Image 1: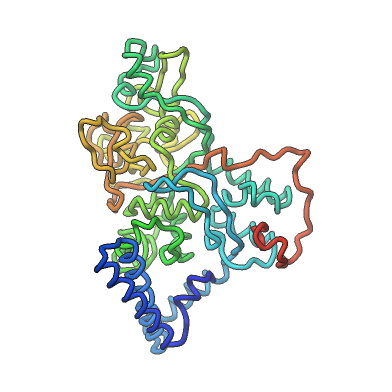
Image 2 (image 1 turned 90 degrees about the horizontal axis):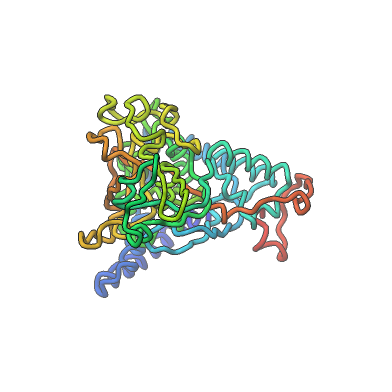
Length: 444
Protein backbone atom coordinates (compact mmCIF):
# COMPACT_ATOMS: atom_id res chain seq x y z
CA UNK A 1 0.00 0.00 0.00
CA UNK A 2 1.39 3.44 -0.88
CA UNK A 3 2.14 6.10 1.70
CA UNK A 4 -0.73 8.20 0.47
CA UNK A 5 -3.19 5.33 0.94
CA UNK A 6 -1.92 4.73 4.47
CA UNK A 7 -2.28 8.43 5.14
CA UNK A 8 -5.97 8.48 4.19
CA UNK A 9 -6.75 5.14 5.81
CA UNK A 10 -5.68 5.96 9.35
CA UNK A 11 -7.94 4.20 11.82
CA UNK A 12 -7.90 6.80 14.60
CA UNK A 13 -11.05 8.91 14.34
CA UNK A 14 -9.48 11.97 15.96
CA UNK A 15 -6.57 11.88 13.53
CA UNK A 16 -8.94 11.72 10.57
CA UNK A 17 -10.93 14.69 11.78
CA UNK A 18 -7.72 16.62 12.44
CA UNK A 19 -6.67 15.98 8.83
CA UNK A 20 -10.12 17.05 7.65
CA UNK A 21 -9.88 20.26 9.68
CA UNK A 22 -6.49 21.15 8.18
CA UNK A 23 -7.83 20.40 4.69
CA UNK A 24 -10.84 22.63 5.32
CA UNK A 25 -8.56 25.47 6.45
CA UNK A 26 -6.44 25.06 3.31
CA UNK A 27 -9.60 25.14 1.21
CA UNK A 28 -10.85 28.32 2.93
CA UNK A 29 -7.50 30.05 2.41
CA UNK A 30 -7.65 28.99 -1.23
CA UNK A 31 -11.06 30.67 -1.57
CA UNK A 32 -9.86 33.79 0.25
CA UNK A 33 -6.66 34.12 -1.78
CA UNK A 34 -8.24 32.74 -5.00
CA UNK A 35 -5.43 30.17 -5.21
CA UNK A 36 -6.36 27.21 -7.45
CA UNK A 37 -3.75 24.82 -6.03
CA UNK A 38 -4.88 25.36 -2.43
CA UNK A 39 -8.50 24.99 -3.51
CA UNK A 40 -7.80 21.74 -5.33
CA UNK A 41 -5.60 20.12 -2.67
CA UNK A 42 -7.89 21.15 0.18
CA UNK A 43 -11.01 19.90 -1.57
CA UNK A 44 -9.49 16.57 -2.67
CA UNK A 45 -7.96 15.76 0.75
CA UNK A 46 -11.15 16.73 2.58
CA UNK A 47 -13.33 14.58 0.31
CA UNK A 48 -11.00 11.58 0.52
CA UNK A 49 -10.96 11.74 4.31
CA UNK A 50 -14.76 12.05 4.46
CA UNK A 51 -15.09 9.18 1.98
CA UNK A 52 -12.87 7.06 4.25
CA UNK A 53 -15.12 7.89 7.19
CA UNK A 54 -18.13 6.71 5.19
CA UNK A 55 -16.35 3.52 4.15
CA UNK A 56 -15.43 2.83 7.77
CA UNK A 57 -19.04 3.23 8.80
CA UNK A 58 -20.10 0.74 6.11
CA UNK A 59 -17.44 -1.72 7.26
CA UNK A 60 -18.68 -1.43 10.84
CA UNK A 61 -22.22 -2.24 9.61
CA UNK A 62 -21.85 -4.62 6.65
CA UNK A 63 -24.48 -4.07 3.99
CA UNK A 64 -25.32 -5.93 0.80
CA UNK A 65 -22.22 -4.55 -0.99
CA UNK A 66 -19.75 -5.37 1.80
CA UNK A 67 -18.71 -8.83 0.67
CA UNK A 68 -18.30 -7.84 -3.01
CA UNK A 69 -16.11 -4.89 -1.99
CA UNK A 70 -14.12 -7.17 0.33
CA UNK A 71 -13.49 -9.64 -2.51
CA UNK A 72 -12.50 -6.75 -4.83
CA UNK A 73 -9.94 -5.43 -2.31
CA UNK A 74 -8.56 -8.91 -1.66
CA UNK A 75 -8.10 -9.37 -5.41
CA UNK A 76 -6.15 -6.11 -5.66
CA UNK A 77 -3.95 -7.00 -2.68
CA UNK A 78 -3.10 -10.36 -4.19
CA UNK A 79 -1.94 -8.68 -7.41
CA UNK A 80 0.14 -5.86 -5.92
CA UNK A 81 3.76 -5.90 -7.12
CA UNK A 82 5.30 -2.58 -5.98
CA UNK A 83 8.77 -1.10 -5.96
CA UNK A 84 10.78 2.15 -5.96
CA UNK A 85 10.31 5.25 -8.11
CA UNK A 86 11.12 5.05 -11.82
CA UNK A 87 11.88 8.36 -13.55
CA UNK A 88 10.69 9.05 -17.07
CA UNK A 89 12.56 11.03 -19.69
CA UNK A 90 9.63 11.33 -22.06
CA UNK A 91 7.80 14.40 -23.27
CA UNK A 92 4.98 15.94 -21.30
CA UNK A 93 1.86 13.94 -20.55
CA UNK A 94 0.02 17.18 -20.07
CA UNK A 95 -0.62 20.71 -21.19
CA UNK A 96 1.91 22.01 -18.67
CA UNK A 97 4.72 20.51 -20.80
CA UNK A 98 6.54 19.14 -17.76
CA UNK A 99 8.37 15.80 -17.57
CA UNK A 100 7.20 14.23 -14.30
CA UNK A 101 8.77 11.08 -12.89
CA UNK A 102 6.82 7.87 -12.72
CA UNK A 103 5.70 7.48 -9.09
CA UNK A 104 6.49 4.41 -7.01
CA UNK A 105 2.80 3.59 -6.90
CA UNK A 106 2.90 3.19 -10.68
CA UNK A 107 4.70 -0.06 -9.92
CA UNK A 108 3.11 -0.89 -6.60
CA UNK A 109 4.19 -1.95 -3.12
CA UNK A 110 6.99 -4.21 -1.95
CA UNK A 111 7.63 -7.22 -4.25
CA UNK A 112 8.90 -10.51 -2.83
CA UNK A 113 11.39 -10.99 -5.66
CA UNK A 114 12.50 -9.59 -8.98
CA UNK A 115 10.43 -12.19 -10.83
CA UNK A 116 7.36 -11.23 -8.83
CA UNK A 117 7.93 -7.61 -9.83
CA UNK A 118 8.35 -8.48 -13.51
CA UNK A 119 5.35 -10.80 -13.54
CA UNK A 120 3.13 -8.17 -11.95
CA UNK A 121 4.14 -5.40 -14.34
CA UNK A 122 3.79 -7.58 -17.43
CA UNK A 123 0.40 -8.84 -16.29
CA UNK A 124 -0.93 -5.27 -16.12
CA UNK A 125 0.65 -4.08 -19.38
CA UNK A 126 3.36 -1.95 -17.74
CA UNK A 127 6.31 -3.42 -19.62
CA UNK A 128 7.50 0.10 -20.51
CA UNK A 129 8.56 0.61 -16.88
CA UNK A 130 10.84 -2.42 -17.13
CA UNK A 131 12.57 -1.19 -20.29
CA UNK A 132 13.77 2.14 -18.99
CA UNK A 133 17.58 2.25 -18.54
CA UNK A 134 17.41 2.82 -14.78
CA UNK A 135 15.26 -0.30 -14.43
CA UNK A 136 16.93 -2.62 -16.93
CA UNK A 137 20.28 -2.50 -15.17
CA UNK A 138 18.73 -4.41 -12.26
CA UNK A 139 17.04 -7.11 -14.36
CA UNK A 140 18.29 -10.34 -15.88
CA UNK A 141 18.52 -10.81 -19.62
CA UNK A 142 15.58 -13.21 -19.42
CA UNK A 143 13.38 -10.55 -17.82
CA UNK A 144 14.42 -7.94 -20.37
CA UNK A 145 13.65 -10.26 -23.28
CA UNK A 146 10.17 -10.89 -21.85
CA UNK A 147 9.51 -7.16 -21.64
CA UNK A 148 10.81 -6.56 -25.18
CA UNK A 149 8.52 -9.28 -26.53
CA UNK A 150 5.55 -7.59 -24.87
CA UNK A 151 6.60 -4.25 -26.39
CA UNK A 152 6.95 -5.70 -29.89
CA UNK A 153 3.56 -7.40 -29.67
CA UNK A 154 1.67 -4.39 -28.30
CA UNK A 155 3.37 -1.47 -30.07
CA UNK A 156 4.63 -0.58 -33.56
CA UNK A 157 7.65 1.55 -34.39
CA UNK A 158 7.04 4.82 -36.23
CA UNK A 159 10.42 5.79 -37.73
CA UNK A 160 11.98 9.22 -37.56
CA UNK A 161 11.23 11.69 -40.32
CA UNK A 162 9.21 14.72 -41.31
CA UNK A 163 5.43 14.85 -41.61
CA UNK A 164 3.28 17.50 -43.25
CA UNK A 165 0.53 19.00 -41.10
CA UNK A 166 -2.17 21.60 -41.69
CA UNK A 167 -4.04 22.51 -44.85
CA UNK A 168 -1.25 21.39 -47.17
CA UNK A 169 -1.36 17.84 -45.83
CA UNK A 170 -4.85 17.16 -47.21
CA UNK A 171 -3.77 18.51 -50.60
CA UNK A 172 -0.67 16.33 -50.88
CA UNK A 173 -0.90 13.33 -53.20
CA UNK A 174 0.72 10.00 -52.53
CA UNK A 175 1.43 9.79 -56.26
CA UNK A 176 3.48 12.92 -56.77
CA UNK A 177 3.68 14.89 -53.55
CA UNK A 178 2.94 18.56 -53.10
CA UNK A 179 5.47 20.23 -55.38
CA UNK A 180 3.48 23.40 -56.15
CA UNK A 181 3.14 24.66 -52.57
CA UNK A 182 4.74 27.86 -51.32
CA UNK A 183 8.17 26.73 -50.01
CA UNK A 184 7.86 28.96 -46.92
CA UNK A 185 4.40 27.62 -46.10
CA UNK A 186 5.59 24.09 -46.74
CA UNK A 187 8.57 24.49 -44.44
CA UNK A 188 6.37 25.93 -41.69
CA UNK A 189 4.06 22.91 -41.83
CA UNK A 190 6.73 20.22 -41.95
CA UNK A 191 7.36 18.78 -38.51
CA UNK A 192 10.28 16.58 -37.54
CA UNK A 193 9.26 13.45 -35.63
CA UNK A 194 11.71 11.37 -33.63
CA UNK A 195 11.36 7.56 -33.62
CA UNK A 196 8.49 6.53 -31.37
CA UNK A 197 6.51 3.42 -30.55
CA UNK A 198 2.73 3.67 -30.86
CA UNK A 199 0.14 1.25 -29.51
CA UNK A 200 -1.14 -1.10 -32.20
CA UNK A 201 -4.62 -0.89 -30.65
CA UNK A 202 -6.56 1.75 -28.77
CA UNK A 203 -6.63 1.24 -25.00
CA UNK A 204 -9.44 -1.21 -24.20
CA UNK A 205 -11.85 -1.44 -21.29
CA UNK A 206 -10.04 -4.42 -19.80
CA UNK A 207 -6.71 -2.58 -19.90
CA UNK A 208 -8.16 0.53 -18.27
CA UNK A 209 -9.82 -1.68 -15.62
CA UNK A 210 -6.35 -2.49 -14.27
CA UNK A 211 -5.76 1.20 -13.60
CA UNK A 212 -9.11 1.60 -11.85
CA UNK A 213 -8.63 -1.55 -9.75
CA UNK A 214 -5.15 -0.36 -8.72
CA UNK A 215 -6.68 2.79 -7.20
CA UNK A 216 -5.35 5.11 -9.90
CA UNK A 217 -8.11 7.66 -9.29
CA UNK A 218 -7.08 7.99 -5.64
CA UNK A 219 -3.34 8.38 -6.22
CA UNK A 220 -2.81 12.08 -6.85
CA UNK A 221 0.73 11.70 -8.19
CA UNK A 222 -0.64 10.48 -11.52
CA UNK A 223 -2.77 13.58 -12.11
CA UNK A 224 -2.11 17.04 -13.49
CA UNK A 225 -2.40 19.77 -10.86
CA UNK A 226 -5.07 21.59 -12.86
CA UNK A 227 -7.19 18.41 -12.88
CA UNK A 228 -7.40 18.10 -9.08
CA UNK A 229 -10.50 20.30 -8.64
CA UNK A 230 -12.32 18.11 -11.19
CA UNK A 231 -11.01 14.77 -9.94
CA UNK A 232 -14.12 14.03 -7.90
CA UNK A 233 -16.24 14.49 -11.03
CA UNK A 234 -14.43 11.71 -12.88
CA UNK A 235 -16.96 9.07 -11.85
CA UNK A 236 -19.17 6.51 -13.56
CA UNK A 237 -22.96 6.11 -13.61
CA UNK A 238 -23.04 5.02 -9.96
CA UNK A 239 -20.59 7.62 -8.60
CA UNK A 240 -17.59 5.26 -8.45
CA UNK A 241 -14.23 6.42 -9.83
CA UNK A 242 -13.96 5.42 -13.46
CA UNK A 243 -15.06 6.17 -17.03
CA UNK A 244 -18.38 7.93 -17.43
CA UNK A 245 -20.37 5.00 -18.83
CA UNK A 246 -19.17 2.28 -16.44
CA UNK A 247 -21.19 0.99 -13.45
CA UNK A 248 -19.79 0.35 -9.94
CA UNK A 249 -16.26 0.86 -11.20
CA UNK A 250 -16.63 -1.93 -13.81
CA UNK A 251 -17.01 -1.90 -17.58
CA UNK A 252 -20.25 -3.42 -18.96
CA UNK A 253 -20.21 -7.20 -19.23
CA UNK A 254 -18.86 -8.40 -22.56
CA UNK A 255 -17.25 -5.06 -23.47
CA UNK A 256 -13.71 -5.91 -22.42
CA UNK A 257 -12.26 -5.54 -25.93
CA UNK A 258 -14.10 -2.33 -26.79
CA UNK A 259 -12.05 0.88 -26.64
CA UNK A 260 -12.46 2.69 -23.34
CA UNK A 261 -14.55 5.85 -23.85
CA UNK A 262 -16.08 8.44 -21.56
CA UNK A 263 -12.64 9.40 -20.29
CA UNK A 264 -11.32 12.94 -20.24
CA UNK A 265 -7.91 13.97 -21.53
CA UNK A 266 -6.71 14.09 -17.91
CA UNK A 267 -7.84 10.52 -17.27
CA UNK A 268 -6.04 9.34 -20.40
CA UNK A 269 -2.87 11.17 -19.33
CA UNK A 270 -3.06 9.69 -15.80
CA UNK A 271 -3.40 6.17 -17.20
CA UNK A 272 -0.46 6.84 -19.52
CA UNK A 273 1.73 7.82 -16.59
CA UNK A 274 0.66 4.74 -14.64
CA UNK A 275 1.82 2.41 -17.44
CA UNK A 276 5.01 4.42 -18.10
CA UNK A 277 4.02 5.89 -21.47
CA UNK A 278 2.46 9.14 -22.70
CA UNK A 279 -0.14 10.38 -25.16
CA UNK A 280 1.19 10.77 -28.71
CA UNK A 281 1.72 14.21 -30.16
CA UNK A 282 -0.45 15.30 -33.08
CA UNK A 283 2.52 14.95 -35.45
CA UNK A 284 3.38 11.45 -34.20
CA UNK A 285 -0.19 10.26 -34.65
CA UNK A 286 -0.38 11.74 -38.16
CA UNK A 287 2.93 10.23 -39.23
CA UNK A 288 1.83 6.79 -38.05
CA UNK A 289 -1.25 6.94 -40.28
CA UNK A 290 -0.11 8.96 -43.30
CA UNK A 291 3.34 7.29 -43.48
CA UNK A 292 4.99 10.17 -45.40
CA UNK A 293 7.74 9.62 -47.93
CA UNK A 294 9.95 12.62 -48.72
CA UNK A 295 11.50 11.93 -52.10
CA UNK A 296 13.13 15.38 -52.36
CA UNK A 297 13.11 18.69 -50.44
CA UNK A 298 9.61 20.14 -50.76
CA UNK A 299 8.29 16.95 -52.35
CA UNK A 300 6.51 14.76 -49.82
CA UNK A 301 3.88 12.07 -50.40
CA UNK A 302 1.40 11.11 -47.66
CA UNK A 303 -1.53 8.74 -47.55
CA UNK A 304 -5.01 10.15 -47.05
CA UNK A 305 -6.04 6.99 -45.21
CA UNK A 306 -3.71 4.44 -43.60
CA UNK A 307 -4.53 1.98 -46.42
CA UNK A 308 -4.36 4.42 -49.38
CA UNK A 309 -6.15 7.30 -51.07
CA UNK A 310 -9.76 6.10 -51.35
CA UNK A 311 -12.22 5.52 -48.54
CA UNK A 312 -13.40 1.94 -48.10
CA UNK A 313 -16.38 1.21 -45.82
CA UNK A 314 -14.94 -2.24 -45.09
CA UNK A 315 -11.77 -0.81 -43.55
CA UNK A 316 -13.07 1.66 -40.94
CA UNK A 317 -16.01 2.00 -38.55
CA UNK A 318 -17.71 5.27 -39.59
CA UNK A 319 -21.33 6.33 -40.11
CA UNK A 320 -21.06 5.36 -43.78
CA UNK A 321 -20.01 1.88 -42.69
CA UNK A 322 -23.24 1.45 -40.73
CA UNK A 323 -21.51 1.99 -37.40
CA UNK A 324 -23.90 2.02 -34.43
CA UNK A 325 -21.19 2.14 -31.79
CA UNK A 326 -17.57 1.19 -31.13
CA UNK A 327 -16.24 -2.17 -32.31
CA UNK A 328 -13.58 -4.26 -30.54
CA UNK A 329 -10.15 -2.71 -30.93
CA UNK A 330 -8.78 -5.66 -32.93
CA UNK A 331 -11.48 -5.79 -35.62
CA UNK A 332 -11.27 -4.41 -39.20
CA UNK A 333 -7.70 -5.56 -39.95
CA UNK A 334 -8.07 -4.24 -43.50
CA UNK A 335 -7.67 -0.70 -42.17
CA UNK A 336 -4.27 -1.34 -40.60
CA UNK A 337 -1.52 1.19 -41.32
CA UNK A 338 1.77 0.47 -43.08
CA UNK A 339 3.42 0.12 -39.67
CA UNK A 340 0.81 -2.33 -38.36
CA UNK A 341 -1.39 0.02 -36.30
CA UNK A 342 -5.13 -0.69 -36.19
CA UNK A 343 -8.14 1.62 -36.34
CA UNK A 344 -6.35 4.94 -36.61
CA UNK A 345 -9.35 5.94 -38.70
CA UNK A 346 -12.86 5.47 -37.32
CA UNK A 347 -14.29 3.65 -34.27
CA UNK A 348 -13.38 6.41 -31.76
CA UNK A 349 -11.61 9.75 -31.86
CA UNK A 350 -8.26 9.67 -30.09
CA UNK A 351 -6.75 12.19 -27.66
CA UNK A 352 -3.30 13.59 -28.46
CA UNK A 353 -0.95 15.63 -26.30
CA UNK A 354 -0.98 18.71 -28.57
CA UNK A 355 -3.09 21.84 -27.94
CA UNK A 356 -5.12 22.64 -31.05
CA UNK A 357 -3.95 26.26 -30.90
CA UNK A 358 -0.47 25.09 -31.95
CA UNK A 359 -1.86 23.56 -35.15
CA UNK A 360 -4.70 25.69 -36.44
CA UNK A 361 -4.92 29.02 -38.21
CA UNK A 362 -3.70 31.67 -35.78
CA UNK A 363 -6.43 34.02 -36.97
CA UNK A 364 -9.09 31.68 -35.57
CA UNK A 365 -8.04 32.36 -31.94
CA UNK A 366 -8.52 28.79 -30.77
CA UNK A 367 -8.60 28.43 -26.98
CA UNK A 368 -5.34 27.13 -25.54
CA UNK A 369 -7.29 24.63 -23.44
CA UNK A 370 -8.65 22.76 -26.49
CA UNK A 371 -6.66 19.62 -27.31
CA UNK A 372 -6.26 17.99 -30.70
CA UNK A 373 -8.20 14.79 -31.36
CA UNK A 374 -7.66 12.64 -34.42
CA UNK A 375 -9.17 9.91 -36.59
CA UNK A 376 -12.95 10.23 -36.53
CA UNK A 377 -15.41 7.85 -34.86
CA UNK A 378 -18.31 5.48 -35.50
CA UNK A 379 -20.70 8.45 -35.68
CA UNK A 380 -18.56 10.63 -37.99
CA UNK A 381 -20.87 11.39 -40.91
CA UNK A 382 -18.51 12.92 -43.49
CA UNK A 383 -15.61 10.84 -44.76
CA UNK A 384 -13.40 13.92 -45.16
CA UNK A 385 -13.56 14.38 -41.37
CA UNK A 386 -11.94 11.01 -40.83
CA UNK A 387 -8.65 11.15 -42.70
CA UNK A 388 -5.05 11.06 -41.53
CA UNK A 389 -4.90 14.85 -41.89
CA UNK A 390 -8.22 16.14 -40.56
CA UNK A 391 -7.78 18.19 -37.39
CA UNK A 392 -10.41 18.55 -34.69
CA UNK A 393 -10.32 19.48 -31.03
CA UNK A 394 -12.07 18.96 -27.73
CA UNK A 395 -11.92 20.41 -24.22
CA UNK A 396 -9.70 18.20 -22.01
CA UNK A 397 -12.50 17.75 -19.45
CA UNK A 398 -14.91 16.29 -22.01
CA UNK A 399 -15.93 12.67 -21.41
CA UNK A 400 -17.69 11.75 -24.64
CA UNK A 401 -18.89 8.30 -25.79
CA UNK A 402 -16.90 8.59 -29.04
CA UNK A 403 -13.45 9.60 -27.73
CA UNK A 404 -10.79 7.13 -26.60
CA UNK A 405 -7.00 7.05 -26.83
CA UNK A 406 -3.85 5.07 -27.54
CA UNK A 407 -0.38 5.67 -26.11
CA UNK A 408 3.14 6.38 -27.32
CA UNK A 409 6.61 5.51 -26.05
CA UNK A 410 9.57 7.48 -27.45
CA UNK A 411 12.53 5.35 -28.45
CA UNK A 412 14.73 7.85 -26.60
CA UNK A 413 13.18 6.61 -23.34
CA UNK A 414 14.55 3.14 -24.01
CA UNK A 415 18.06 1.82 -24.24
CA UNK A 416 19.24 -0.64 -26.86
CA UNK A 417 20.71 -3.70 -25.20
CA UNK A 418 24.07 -4.83 -26.54
CA UNK A 419 25.27 -8.34 -25.89
CA UNK A 420 28.55 -7.02 -24.52
CA UNK A 421 26.92 -4.97 -21.78
CA UNK A 422 23.83 -7.10 -21.24
CA UNK A 423 23.44 -8.07 -17.59
CA UNK A 424 24.28 -11.59 -16.58
CA UNK A 425 21.40 -13.81 -15.56
CA UNK A 426 20.75 -13.14 -11.93
CA UNK A 427 19.51 -15.59 -9.35
CA UNK A 428 15.93 -14.87 -8.38
CA UNK A 429 16.48 -14.14 -4.71
CA UNK A 430 14.26 -12.28 -2.27
CA UNK A 431 14.82 -8.52 -2.55
CA UNK A 432 16.54 -6.85 0.38
CA UNK A 433 17.05 -3.20 1.29
CA UNK A 434 20.37 -1.48 1.84
CA UNK A 435 21.32 2.20 2.03
CA UNK A 436 23.51 1.81 -1.05
CA UNK A 437 20.76 0.65 -3.36
CA UNK A 438 17.73 2.27 -1.70
CA UNK A 439 17.38 4.96 -4.37
CA UNK A 440 18.79 3.10 -7.35
CA UNK A 441 17.26 -0.35 -7.35
CA UNK A 442 13.74 -0.26 -8.73
CA UNK A 443 13.24 -3.82 -7.53
CA UNK A 444 13.67 -2.71 -3.91
